[in-house]
Length: 273
Image (cartoon, rainbow, N blue to C red; front, side, top):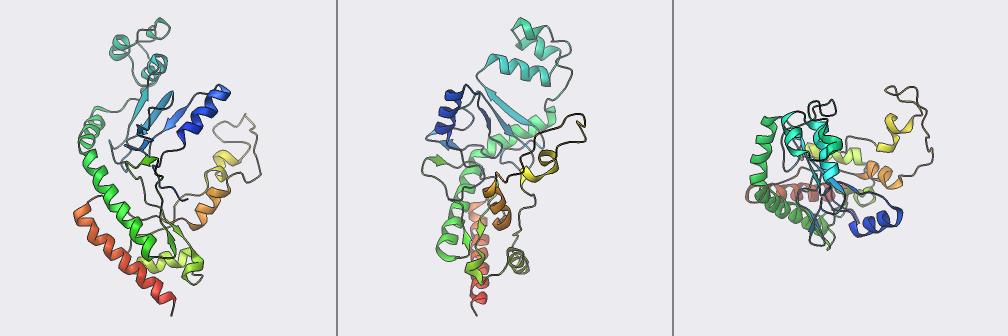
């Protein structure tokens, strides 16, 4: 099952695992604004959660984010990382942390006021964006599944609802298109005017920051490196993944989606000649 970006994880399983091992849960909700798992909003399961508001997110600020927690201690520590003086003085009650109010923790990681204003604006429009994006991408998935044999559309579990749909990433099945490589398909698709590309980043575990014993930023520390490929699914996705536009305007974009399907079917028919 190919899950779309922004699809919630199996939170019941994660909670069970965390309780059994005395672990804290940090939810990364950067791609999942508005998504729910069994009727409950993402960001409300863990000890703390973070939502990115980078420019490409459905709720955007340019740069910035939102931290969610029901822990006073986590809230105080996060406040001291982002703020100093007035806010730290007025909002932090724990004496262990309140004494840092003048300096914070020596950093200023808060969002700028301008970015916060942008975020408020995009938040007001989010329900409209979410509704229209879901209509567009559900429609696109249905048509791909029914009419385009060489693409595998993302599937949404019946236990979740999708919010932001950060990215639309179907899989390419070369065997159903005459063995044409993914790179060849991308070139053909782009010649038809389709904004389709291969993922731009490699497997994260193979990047130098994670795969090398020494990192230039911390040269004095030697790290354990596991040379065994522990991420075969990620490697497979790197080989056969595709990136489509994220359509968000149902009335206008439905015609564009229809044109995409016509072009994708044309490519399919040409490969069979």
